[in-house]
Image (cartoon, rainbow, N blue to C red; front, side, top):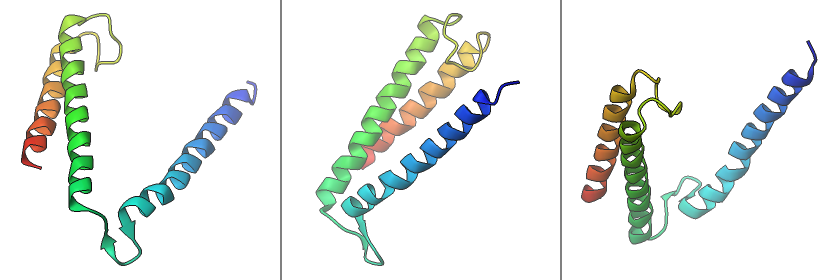
Length: 104
């Protein structure tokens, strides 16, 4: 067996760790301070959370519709045979996110 798959796996792991470590300071500067708690405008923070919930809920509902429309051809869902379960799970998660959007 060649060492290429191990090298590729190692490089991907290092890359993912680097992305996680390099993006955190950018987010920390935007939303929080050291021992000062969360800073910034409440309106901006609320808008940020609302956008996350709205787009996430919409994405999950689109995925639920796709699970019903293309039940046996899309390998993204749980299994070719479990498309009904996939649609239900995705619809429930999407609905919860959109309901949360209404209460934020």
